[in-house]
Length: 321
Image 1: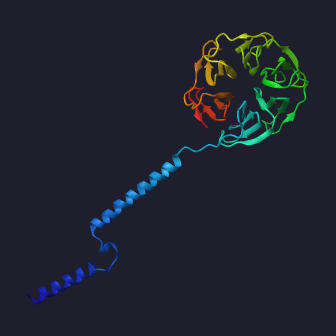
Image 2 (image 1 turned 30 degrees about the vertical axis):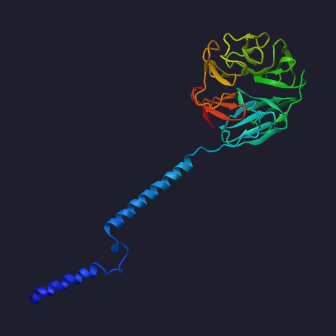
Image 3 (image 1 turned 45 degrees about the vertical axis):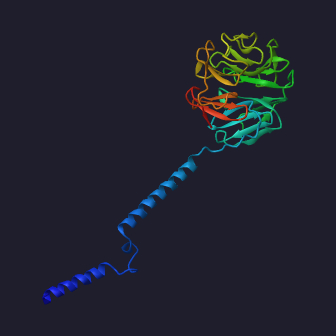
């Protein structure tokens, strides 16, 4: 080997020595084989995928909604400024939710049975609440209530309704005394008729024809009056189950009626001539009361045990709140 070849060989060995450090020297990647590096990368990707899976499962799991603090929802009223805020009347008093029914707080009256809360169609901040030996009025959406002291021919109301054409005209049903009416905002009441059989649990005035009243009777089912409550007759077609415990006409849709019959939600779009059951999405068939928010065209339903369901398609499908 010539001197020149020996010098070239020495340079190659020197360069190799600089690039490949001896065992135990250099950074970790220079001491690992390609297969080891690939294995570590694959293991890391698998670990990250497993972590993402468990995090997604945790955050997407159904949230546990605590039970409401009342045993039974007897009435439901939506706040006109916020459809996720509404009031429930129960045997234990009045309760409010601000998040669609996931959390409740005592509100207004406690230890008094609130059987009905109704809103004035002309002014939805105007509410009436009534029950056993109580009648109260609110003009701010239910934040402040003023007790009223009318002379009633019985222990209290089981149902109330406000005439949308005459805001100071109220209708009510007093057990043992029948249908009563006030034309002065609830201060004085007169008996319209005591010929209704059973107890009326829900009362409503047709939005565009205040001469027509609807009532849910415990013995007669859905009954209708065409003369402002003086005389009553069974509806042309009864809902497909009984008893009928609630009736709700829809403002802006004069032929549309909702009712609660044997715990089911039913709907008529021809003024009560035919009915269809609306139960898609309902996990229970123990519906108690209904309410309607005209601002968002949303229906709300409460079951007897306080579960809240919402429908934005006219009651076709329901979603648990």
